[in-house]
Length: 276
Image (cartoon, rainbow, N blue to C red; front, side, top):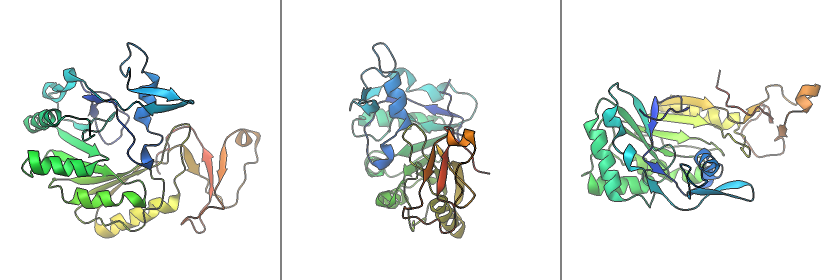
């Protein structure tokens, strides 16, 4: 059986890797890092891979291949959409080429499944596919990368050069306005806010700008969640009830953003809120 997952657009995850390292600002509050630190005691699944540092989780820089899970998709009879390595990165610098080769052989052999192969290291993904896969990818393998802020837009250019049936962007956590994104040869864009105890809010204006660009380019758009902070619809509204005052509010009126007449106040809900 595959791992159950809370990721709404897939059926399961295929995790044959554990451990990672931070690559860019979107990694700062990584859920995988937090989960790994919680279960890193001796004898637990993520032993030695993460630890607590001044009350916050930190990867230790180690990575582990879980060989017993390398062939999991072969045993799945019913077709499913599967996220590859939701607790790591298949193209992390420490992942041996032979392990990536094995994963590709499994994906080729399991054409009944759809694999979402996602990375924050599209440069290594492209180099691997060019040199080890003769520049080709099975049609059932979709490739994607994270673009969380303008400085990461270069990843889109690299992804565009990878010859996949479907290319997708994950703008999650979206932590800044992306500006203009070149969506040529991109098929799907996922947008979501950040969750967790130190989550950063996501402005509605940032989301609307991406959505508008997707509509203009004919690219599928998927809003996953607001995250930890939900925008308050009434302009200039302050918490006034006893229950609201006990909640955490965030006033962003002094920040540089694209909201215009949209509210700059956010209420913390401590849960993932789906879009209407």
